[in-house]
Amino acid sequence: MAFGSLRPDAAWQRQGLTVVIALLGTVLFVFIEAPLPFLFGPLVACLVAALARVPISGTGKLGKVTRTILGVAIGASITPEVAERLPQMALSLSLVPVSLAITALVGLPFFRRLCGFDLPTAWYASMPGGLQEMVLFGQEAGGDVRALSLIHATRLLLIVLVAPIILTQGFGGDLNNPVGDPAATLPLHEMAIMAFAAIAGWKGAERIGLFGAAILGPMILAAVLSLTGVLHHRPPAEAILAAQFFIGIGLGAGYLGITLTEIRRFVVAGVVFTLFVAALAAVITIVVIRFGLAPPVDGFLAFAPAGQAEMAVLAIVVGADLGYVVIHHLTRVFLIITGAPLAARLVGVRGGNPPSKGSE
Image 1 (tube, rainbow, N blue to C red):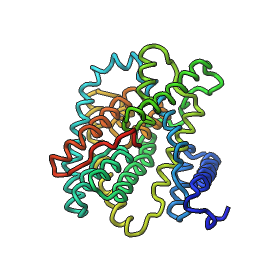
Image 2: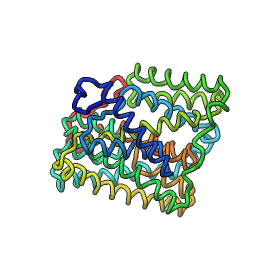
Image 3: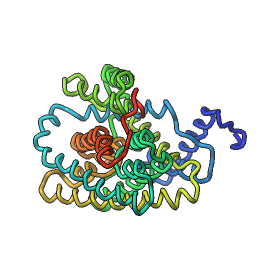
């Protein structure tokens, strides 16, 4: 298929081309025995394609479907044993709002005064939340959508690329842990329960207007089923690999159409700010480890300033305590989604209310 023959409105053609490019990247990374080939293969392939202005795109509904898989995996990790340990996590959980406050106090003047962004853009650029949430909040408040997209995409990309190196070289982690049991070994009724939790949780969350419905809805329903003893397994390995694949596509494709001006202004700002939030996360991780609040790998992943989906994948791959990691990221997500729009008004940003009907 010639790239020039792709019509701008032919979304299915662009998505099909994107998947083909991502598959080629995955095959290459498997062939060269690179770590996390189902994540980094599509990520690098789509990033290169985006920078080369190949007409790729996100994967739309299909990408959301695979996010429901991670939602179920995260929810299934919240077991009665994890719930019993919540009081033991209280001290490390208290560090989450501290880190967010420091990030905002440094990030706002950095983006406002040094980078010259308007106030809404500067505020939501400084919030280390999910890309979609921060872009939508910023858009609602009148911020620069493109700037927010590239700044947060850069943060997520850098963390996802560097975190595995830190895990293996710094903490001696192994990225070859099984991501789950093969589908053929799981009971059929458990598979049916997972499918129900994924679809019903997603659509139910959309109906009530829950933010991030594709991942939070299945997560909540799967957690309820896990805590009540109905669900006992995580999704199969094949499903987790599919989720990695589409996360990689999303991170790489986020740079489609980028210009040199945007690289100089937005990407460089994103890199500098990511270095700061990463350094802050490193300090907090050291505190957590020194006081024996968590093992090194768990503490690192719990405070890494990336999205809950990306960190859940790494926690699964490295064999970390997924329950501990997830609880901390959920706390951060909750505080940002509920607190960022309220705090925005205190610093003079108008608007920024959460979009309705389960916006992603």
